[in-house]
Image (cartoon, rainbow, N blue to C red; front, side):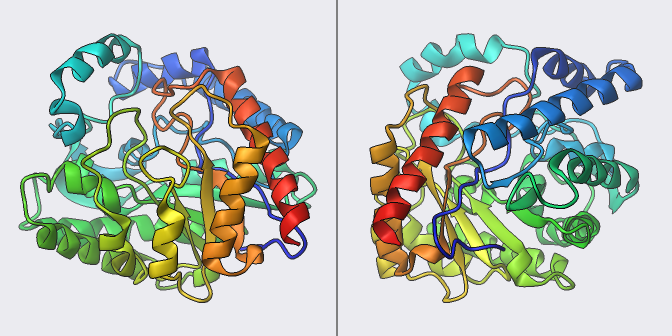
Length: 386
């Protein structure tokens, strides 16, 4: 991964707004309704072209395809792997259900057309990566649209889910144990991980499970059980990355990309040392939202592994407030002080802006203004730090 030798580089956490026509196609496909493949391919091509152009326009250095070719950050694997069917019943996040008035307030939002992350398919047979054509197609399109010579971005990244988030949200109805299911998913995801890096891109593993599952799957269980789960998933990630250089991988960990109280979030103090067991070269952390803006202090108590980079979340993807560039700069300066070297810090977002098609909480025009503010703030911080 590139580090900023003379300035702080800018990036984001992956998903960017999808056009309504593309959202509608993905929603229909996720419901197993018939979709015209040519129309879907055309909509993906145009949407990807647009998000690449917009990222360059607002000043993103390390960009991607905005996850335009996918229905969500993890349920798309059902179209590339065999073994899935039926329907999961994912528990609702504890911080949402503990406040009935908040849930009632948000219910109108849930009526929007979107790809559901709560009722994904289950594993009902051995899980295997069956169709490599979609990942190769997506990688080829990004290479073509972003410029094969690297002229558009300083570097490109591509996201893929952790085996843990797939295992938790696409429940096990086949394997003898949860751990066996996680290992099977790691072996299947290895295909995609290796393809991304082989194509010359940085791999970002999206692993909200390593924090968010504390207040979902493990909400009623001891912290020690959750930490054991983190260790199982980390080991599975390392297994899948056996042939991938660590410096080509960044790990995205978050507490759930939704606007809610988040007062059930596990402390980074509790999980940091477990996360550091991952065989990666950097971490993407939430550091902008009101519940996690203090995490720079945790990084002082639990220093990053010496070779890791930090993508510091300095923009919140769940609010339509546009961060002032000075606020962005201050957050980056605190992150750089915690890490001890501004060259190891990239400016990023807490999470994606449209983790599932139709789920984004920020208006599209506002998304681009927030990313423009991110770039402006990175320039201010760079002038002070370098």
